[in-house]
Length: 132
Image 1 (cartoon, rainbow, N blue to C red):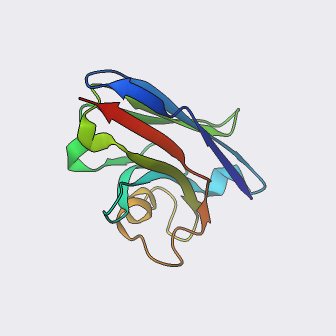
Image 2 (cartoon, one colour):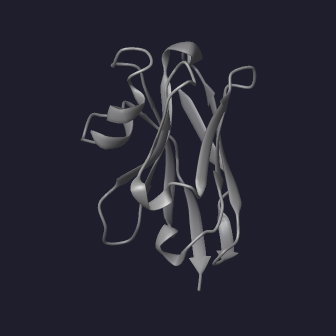
Image 3 (spheres, rainbow, N blue to C red):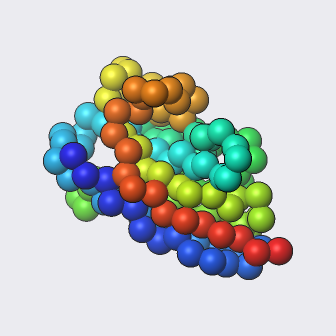
């Protein structure tokens, strides 16, 4: 299983970035995909997740109306469009995937039930730094 995250970088407050997560090695259609971030000295936080069907999404309150998650099934890639970035968005962003919850419902636990064994698959992380 591979989750290859890209698109991070340094941007000024108010700017935009688009993260990409290219997946391989598992049955794409069965998996919810999401983004979890971790800032220095803080706990991991589920930012945005999308169901295996693509029809359901979750956003943490702090990014609602600024971030948009989408999935391209033909390319087996998930995107996170991040607009109006703020310094508090600075973190390492990890792409994650799991299939243990019912289809269409799995996007919420993927982002909110982070533990030592869940989600099952993690990408290598991409750094997002927002300067003030």
